[in-house]
Image (tube, rainbow, N blue to C red; front, side, top):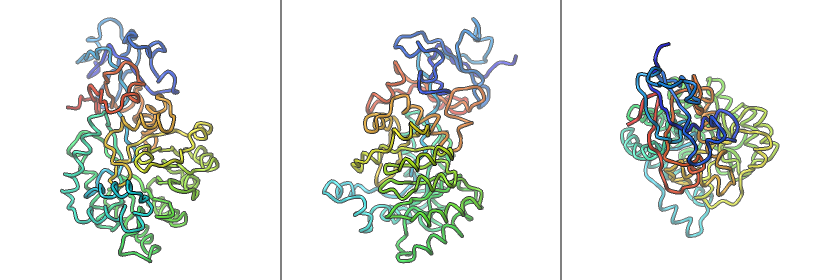
Length: 418
């Protein structure tokens, strides 16, 4: 047989191929600290060629690969997937942080012209180069923790030119860093000031001009909307979704964050890749998601930062076997979070996810939320060779340590990322 390009030995693999126990590892006893590191993973080109017990490749691994790398007993997981971010934006909203500490609510700030609209002003004023330059340090923080795929939404331009500018800036980040960027058009994020009192006209602009332009320029992988009392109604959201479908784009939805407007069920009706937030989602909405194959994306950073008290319906999601993904929701207003690993701890502490569920949420389920579940998010032959080596004793350490970054090495498309 032809030799593999690279082979890692003396590893413990959290493959995430199956259920939550035992982390999809190659052997149940591999979970114990100090257990034998009997796993191996090989890559050929950009794909995984082997992931399993080292004994299956006999005594002399150098016979099987051009390069053999000793993992030193470290754990290896799939590369992390941050499936919901607003990483590209102008300015910040630290002043609103102070206002909220003084008693103002997120909704009150938004209705007074702050919130998303303040970021729209800063984003419109920034050039495409300035947006890229501002986003790169934020991206680097996430990459340093093992992120190999990231979704980036628009939604701070709110005009055809400025939304496309945001999407171009997001695409350009992948030219500067070894990361896969999936872009999502979020034109229906907020009502721009020039359309005050003319919301139906703005929805028509999104449907008839913005979506076709984004498709024509090949700048969007999906379409999202913010369905909420302070944003867009279910009927307006449905019009956006119908346009997306006509133009061949899958949809996602900011659903039921502040109230239950039936967003989860609406997302399911259009077989959305994901419905995100979901604090107020009913069990009927969750059942619809399960039937449609729509992933639930939970965003503990926003929950924490806004000091919310209504927990997402975790037990109902488990009951209906809806995949649960986690994401940083990086944005300047409600989740200025630059650590996906911290989201694991928050999800376990605030939402009572298990460490297994949290790790699945930023690997297998995160990939599913982007429509990439057959390509990445698990360690198995044929999948993209995106994985991370960690200086940890057990997978639960990734959720346990707050503020730590035990990332030892990142492999992207089969090559070690510098």
